[in-house]
Every structure is written in structure tokens, then in C-alpha cells.
Image 1 (tube, rainbow, N blue to C red):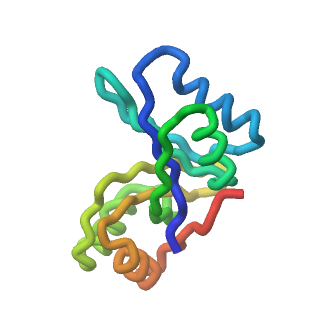
Image 2 (cartoon, helix red, strand yellow; image 1 turned 180 degrees about the horizontal axis):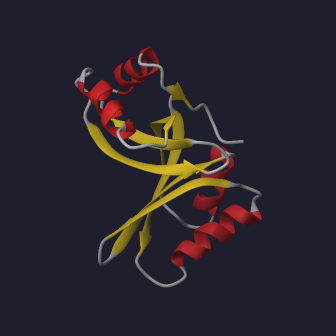
Length: 139
């Protein structure tokens, strides 16, 4: 089962990311992961949060254009070669990775890899069959 990810375009100006964070803070939404990719004029912010619907509504009310898309997040060993193994599994499905990002969970020995696929269901099934734990949420 994929996770909902919030994406929004953000002007590349001082204070814009802070305004996103303040809107979520004021609504009691916790950010589990944040990715920011930028160009000279704008950035794309991708968020995994504990309350997706509330976050979407808060950000829209604050004037941001918000999209919610499904991504797949897995827990995998945090050691050399793990990403290569995961990618080998994905290659068997024919799914294309549209983008990905990762973060380590230092309370254990796991890293979290987040993917956006063009064939989500196929990729999920292959990852589960290969023994990777799909994450269902961040609460």
C-alpha cells in the first residue's frame, strides 16, 4: 500500500519554506521527511507527514498549490550495497523510478528509501516478495 506524499511548488525566496513549516506546526502536523529540489525560480517540496489530509488543507488555506501523490517507502539495511539490491528488484518489474530520496533512522540500523514509480503496484509486490518491509505511515 503506497504512502501519500504532499508536493508543492515554492518560490525560491527567503522565508517561503519557513512559511510551509509554520502552517504545518500551527495545525499540529509532524513532518517525517522533507525533500527540497530547487531551480533558480522555484523549488519542489516533498513531504511525508503524520496527518496528510490536515496538512493538505492547511497548506491550501495558506495559499500553496498542493498535490498529494502516492509513493512507496521501504525500510532497508543501512549498509553498502543495499540500494543496489533494491534497484535490482525494481529492474525486474519494468517500473521506472520517477524520483527517490532516502534518510537514515538512527534509532536502529535501517534506512528509509522513498520512491515514486510509474508502476507502483508491480514495484510494491516485487519489493515485498524480496523481503523488504513496506512502510505504511509515520505516526
